[in-house]
Image (cartoon, rainbow, N blue to C red):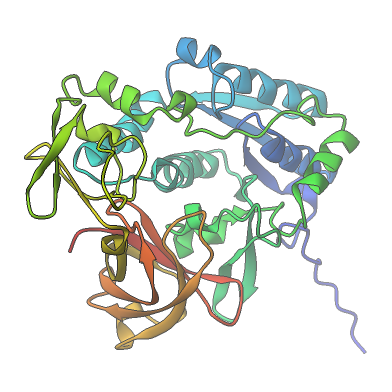
Length: 380
């Protein structure tokens, strides 16, 4: 019997030794990406760490709790030095502003509820940074995201993380099949963040006890309105709060201070039943309020769909899936009615409240953790 002399696959899926496999690790300076880099370096891979400077370095130094800030760049560099692999800082400030921050401001001003972290993954990290990794002759790029890449019958598939509490599939739905061929997510199989921190301690990383980032990196303390006022002077012009019949209920201090579904802070007390923001009319500078029942919807129009199913989206009249319309909500049953390969209407089996233009609707296989893509909600 002939012996099988084929080289076995390494942990990143390549038929060669780790030492002959170059991997670029996207390092934010946090514990997750630091553990990925340290883990791969210890396994003997040819690791190259890359950190992106995404916004003003001086302002970043004064801000805690956000990725890609000055302190985070320092932390990433220290991990690379301790583990003995090269580390580079790339200035992506202009790219980040054009691809993410400007659209965030414009979308918010248009009455939408944007999710800039998705655009950052889509337009910066998994586009420009991924191309940089290719330019460095890397075999793949690894990140610290909590999501799984599994091989299926038709190539690599995207699956939710093993730890539902850390799962980041909502923010990665726009990852294309081509990008998925090149990307690796070494933490997606871990059962908890405690395991990640234990690995950080095992490798002696200085960031082992570093707190997780909570805010959007360029929005200090979650104050969206302050950022938009700075980016778009005059954006906080006052206007009127009206009901769905157009009756004047009071004044507001700028549409940018309100989001669909908001109840608190309207300043129109004394009513028998609570009112919620049901729509924003930016052109008329009106905040339209109504009863909670008006927030519920079962029809969600989508565009810019990224479909990761095995057959084309438009190859069927409908698809039974589970969908998530906010990162904090669990997936629920729905039916996709395709209009084209990039547009569809999603019919929710159970009405959801506060579905807003600018958010993402992410598709999941009802029978498995597989992510089938998603799209952007618009007014239709």
